[in-house]
Structures are given as C-alpha cells and as structure tokens.
Length: 112
Length: 113
Image (cartoon, rainbow over all chains, first blue to last red; front, side, top):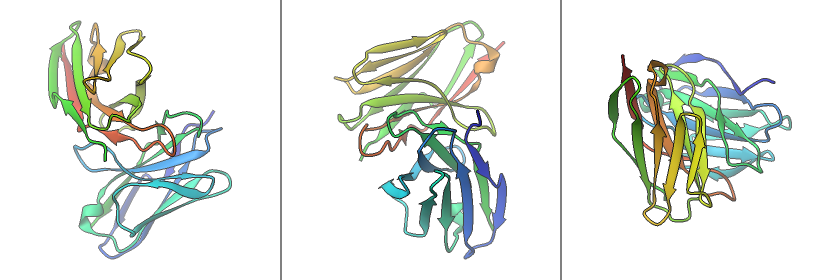
C-alpha cells in the first residue's frame, strides 16, 4: 500500500520563474491538501482539493494555484516566484469522510 | 480565523521521564485535534488525534487530553526514549466543508540519556 508521494524532492528556481509540484495521495484517499512549511515553523495551509475542485483556501495570493486530476493526484503551481516562497511544500492526503491527514515527504523549493 | 498557540517551544527531559506539551485554540467550533511528530528532514507523522466528543485518548506511551471549556489540549509522553526526540506540532480543524489544519509553532523535544 503506497503512502503519499511527492515530486520532485528538491527544486532550485530563480525569482520570477514558475514551478509545478506534484503529489500522489495514499491509495484509497480522495482529498489532497497543500501546506507550506518555512524553516522552524509549523505548516501553513494553502488549499485543499476534492472532486477536482478547490474546496478551501488559506491566506495565499493568487500566484498559488492548483489542480486535482481524476485519479486524485494533484499539482501545486506557483507563478512569479519570490525569495519568500522558499520553503518545504507538503502534500497531505485524506478521505473525505475522515479528518485524518497523512503527509508526503515534501518538496524543498529554493528561490534564488 | 483559528489561532493555535503551543508551549513550550523547547523541552528537554531525561530518558524515562514524562513530557507534556500544551496547546490552546481560539475557535470554539474546532472539533478535531491531531498531533504530529516531525524528525529532522522528514515528513510530519500523525501520532495521535482526538475529536471534541472525547476528553482523553491513549495509545501506548502517548496520550492526549482535551478541555473544550478552556479550549486547550495536551500531549503526554510517558517513559520517554531517545527516539522520541523530534519536533512535535499540535493542530486544530473544524470538521465539515474541508479540514484545514491550523498548526501550532512546534515544540522541540530532546530526550537526554
């Protein structure tokens, strides 16, 4: 039974560029949430996808967008990268009928 | 929106002692409270959770208590071991219409031999 997977593991971009991060949820899960974790801080909620639609969104600008595919996998896109976007991006999967969320290993994004 | 405060930020205990981490939340509508353990460079791992209709939950050496009236909840680790050393995060969410988790700022637990 595969757990939550994310790709890539690490990514280095320059200011102004765009990035796409990918997440495959745990087998049987239908909901994907994305979080940003800055160094030394707790994860901050970006948004959540269910049934291919954004169901809930945190306090992040429109530069952050996402998508969920019919197989429940998800992408996080960030446009016009800023230095402050450097962080660990975590994907969490869950069942729509349960509040328990399980995290993937994350993608470490560095913006230079 | 929901705000979760967590104390202490660092905690050092001797192996075999107990450790207690406390969190308070602001939104009385919150009804789900998970705890995550994050080792250096690893993903947050769900270790225990509690729902608002339960006052206490235990799983081997770890337990969580919830006081809805005071809006606080705590993680208790007994008989600590070196492998318990990690950062622990509490979180809160409102079940229904999405499960946005609002996290505390984390507690660095160090278990010394």
